[in-house]
Image (cartoon, rainbow, N blue to C red):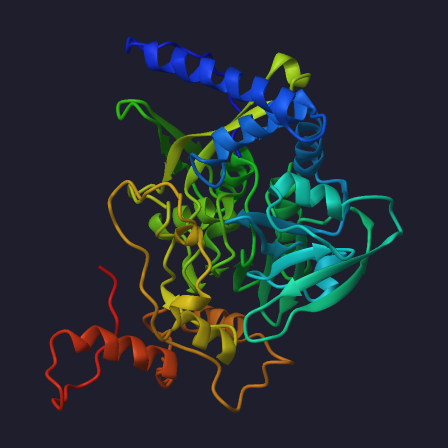
Length: 454
């Protein structure tokens, strides 16, 4: 999220209809006050109306009550109580974007794309994200039972215990002659911790040959931290730009001049849970030819939310989408995401999910998602270029990391020997048959062709 101070400005358009609708709002509120079967709380009704107005715009705009605003500030500072889950609301259903590393949710096995249908036996269907979060937060040490709905399985319960969530943004270790750094989120400590992890790896091995930078399932965070992290790898130049309603108003964010990492080769790992600030960094390093990307197409959250406190936060805040992000080459991240240089599924099951429209979860999944400014579409369901072969032990190994290390060893994606493309799944075969059905006569045959993005 980006934080800016903004002034509201009136437009020259006639406000006659607006005044009429405001009067209508007052009439409806008055009717509910006097006619509803039980007494109502005017404050809650108006707050719900504000939320409804903003969430109708796109999945990321919202009204934050004073309590919500305070909780959001705690999260960006990197310390808060709860279970450690990044969630969103999809058609009134709470959906997991990703669990945060090292938290109760991650340890319990919560996965991106899971639906949370109940908390302690109480349904959360129809609740806003902030309402659902309140259900999950509470006294530290108390148990919480989440009811999870997951593709291909019956609903099941997971028992967790609330903790003070102080996730360490960065973890690092050596992989032979190469370094591995994972950044879990872009909170206020992201740049500082990433820099310290890289310096520690290089101090322990002055002859480090390369670095794998893992941004998988990183839900994003603060814009200034995205620029700061990208700056660790770049020698000046643009990191990202943002463009709002006025096409002439372009704000650019640049890395500082000065060599970093002495040109150390870098491979970035991404997947469908890589979102927002994480996509900014991945897109910048890819466009600037500073790193090659391995994994799956990222989430596609390429919009800027400005948080505007109301009366200094006493009345909460408005979080509203004000711009789109663009990579240094001018690509819009919104909906389409960042495509990797080497497409690799982490597991054989994930490869099947990429080939099936029903299992897709990205920004494009939201019915009211902001459009991609360039009119481009997200890559269609397809079999990924690579997936773990049958002989690969998925429980013990990380196939995407293995292939990232291969890219470092061979010097580039182009020089890395490619594995055989996974056999098309039944789901993809059905998609191909449906795509060909309109042009192929009954009984006719045609060679299989991959699904392409338009």
